[in-house]
Image 1 (cartoon, rainbow, N blue to C red):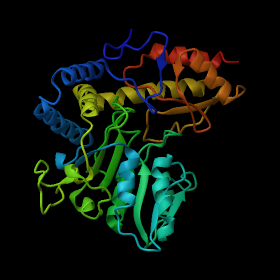
Image 2 (image 1 turned 60 degrees about the horizontal axis):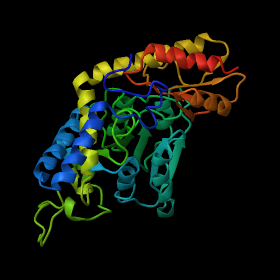
Image 3 (image 1 turned 120 degrees about the horizontal axis):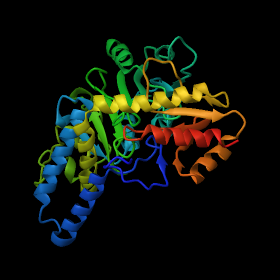
Length: 374
């Protein structure tokens, strides 16, 4: 039986939340309501829209346990936020950034682009030490200004010990930047426990939001270290004083929002987060990991399929990657797509990423298609 919030086609088994998630019913309804209101009244209810924007900041604050909604900026995507950090810090030739060799391009390209400023990106092989965290730490030296890592790796499902990394960075005065796109909406997240300086994520994966709207968290101390790279009316302290001369930048994270907000996206993401927060992230995480464990155990139990993701690390994620021992990945992927299993080719295999609402019978059906691909 389908979850009432996810009226997906009966022809589909949706296991691709690590890429782009379907919208909940309430999100669809909110978008339709907003469109109808806009078409009939234009901006007549703009003050209500501003209230919704404030509500979304508070929802995001709750989701990541930020100290204040003032620490939340609404950005276009993860890449934009990472670029704010990369091009906002005052680098000196000889500085370095430590990361891993498993990062999505969004958390690699901005740092590599700093090479012409004399900044080195050091990419750790997370398999070369007693733990992935130790592999990162081994590359740190006195010229390391920032450590940036994905909370969960997109191609392997590897979940990092963010508390361990954050404490390591805090003790050494190194800035800690987290690409949290594979965590938010799937597992519990606490920026304060992680001693995070910067956290960013798009809303369109595990958070069930639309593409084109994400969150950028900064501590007050960290954001004051960033030179602004975009300017416009919305990032001013006195935002709606359009004759603002002289002007000051906004003291809160809104300084990173240079122009008009994505009001349609704001209404949509707020509706999606309302579902997650109603259920509670502790419950969501438990159900996501239960489904990932179910898939992992089934893959390990079948001699025809090889598990590619880490099965025994204490920190688990909702991503499971595997490959068939005799059927090529591309062939298996096409077979699954043709039979309605929405998944991805990642990490040298097939990536399944179920969410809390996926039924175990759906997982069984998808696994039967994997085995039956022979």
